[in-house]
Amino acid sequence: MHILIAEDEPSLRENLQWMLELEGYEVTAAADGREALAAALTHRPDLVLTDVMMPELDGFGLIKALRSHPATATLPVIMLTARADRSDTRTGMNLGADDYLTKPCRREELLAAISARLERSRIQQLAAQRLQTEAQKAMQIDTLTGLPGRDLFEEQLDTAVGTCETVALICFGLDGFSKINESLGTGVGDLVLREVGKRLQQCIRGSVASHPHDGVGRLGGDQFAVCVTGLPDACSLAGFATVALSALAQPYRVSGHTLFLTASAGGSTYPAQADSVHALLLNAESALHHAKPDGPGMYAYFDSAMNRRVARTLLIHNELHSALQAGDLELYYQPQIRIATGKVVGFEALLRWNHASLGAIPPSEFIPIAEQSGIIVQVGEWVLRTAAKQVAAWLARGHHDFRIAVNISARQFVGQNLPELVGRVLNETGIPPASLELEVTESLALRNVANTLATLHECKALGVHLAMDDFGTGYSSLSYLKRYPLDTLKIDQSFVRNIPHDLGDVAITRAIVAMAQSFELSLVAEGVETPEQFAYLRELGCDDAQGYLFSPAVPAEAAERFFTEPQNTALPT
Image (cartoon, rainbow, N blue to C red; front, side, top):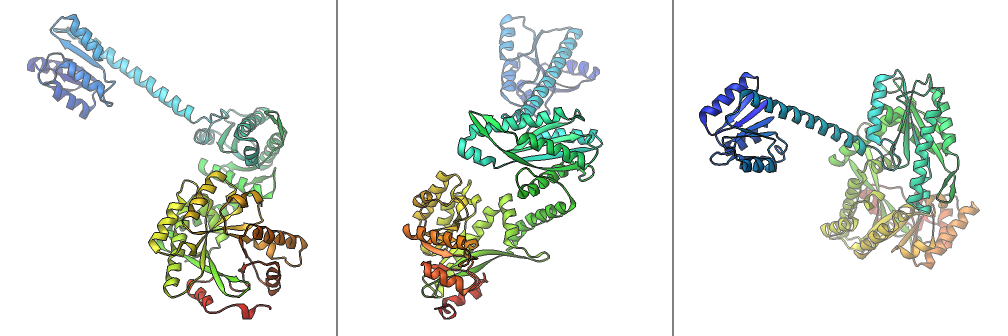
């Protein structure tokens, strides 16, 4: 233990230091309060023994300074004085002294006081550490359900892995839970989540082979996890999952509502499939993601094929960061043709990635990974800036009356100032705002409507065009067409592909055209591949078309030829 002595009398200071060092204490001695304060901040002693009357800074001033500094605020302090004045005692105690001895004091008295104060300090520190640990654990409890949150659940899972021969983990995700929040409010949704937690705990308690390390946690949102130990094989795990899914599928009666909800589940085991808690959790979550597309209420057990897909996903995620930094991404441009004239009126900028060792990675694979990881924000900014630079380059070469359309990710609407970015890109490149078109999806338009609407109006105020991509695939509604500042609707290729033979797609396409015309919006049909489709779209009054009938997406150099090569000669009359 380290004791700091503050005493201006040299002989007394030396005697105190000698005596305490004989008792095994490490001692630092200072001749006045100012020197003692500097030593306390530098060496962090376990106790300070200080005289009251000292030059430079007296004992009262030293205590006041120690108590005002966070590093020494709780340091035990014993005061020594030759004056038997009760006012000194009161002053010292009021300032925060822990004890007060009158000089000359007996050796036994001093050592007893030091020992008592050090022991009291040790107990206080242990109590503080215990309270801090309890507070940290309390913070890791999910306040809504009372279950362990992700961090605490992982700690408990780690204990189970270190204790039990086999540990199984099942991740549960509720199917369509967002619709409850959207239609009935988060208050009702919260009650459902609490009930889900209770039902999973009941499944644990009702298990014949229940063990002390079995437990339930809430990983976040509508995702829960159950740790089950002692199950003999994958079939037993599947049986438990089936029972739990059945329990979660029972009606929920909350706030006067009777709700029907299902869940999907994914399972994994240790040590058969994972060598760590992190890998076990990753495997179970991966299995859950693979179960969801198979339909509501499904369960999937992790296998090596999933592992390979997970590994590839992780590889693409890491390589995508490098590709963005190294400039390995490229924009291709698919022409949009005016149906009436065959002339190019614009291009859609489409992202391409040709990896040195993996080859061409399709956007359908790497874009969702970029979305999930959040790097889509940086990628989206690069796409916007690159497309704008291409507009500037073509304008400089004498091409006019065209737009380049850029897809905007949902992530760029969350926590990002999209209008500010668009304005900055317009200023940097000097292009006319109307030559840039921002494409948003129908599903994005319905997320956080107030925020999305405000963002789109700010972008519109800059002079750029706004288009709704994949129109007709979501919750097509006249109400939001009236509210959103759109210029263009894009008919999704899933409808165009089967016209004019599929009567359902014909009816939908005709309705979209009529809807756009009534709102004075221009129309672009995607995925036009045959002259027959082109002729039917012209008959309906669609404005523009893009697709393989004209060209796939091509590099900028190849796309430029469309400015001088009208397509009407190759199209039906």
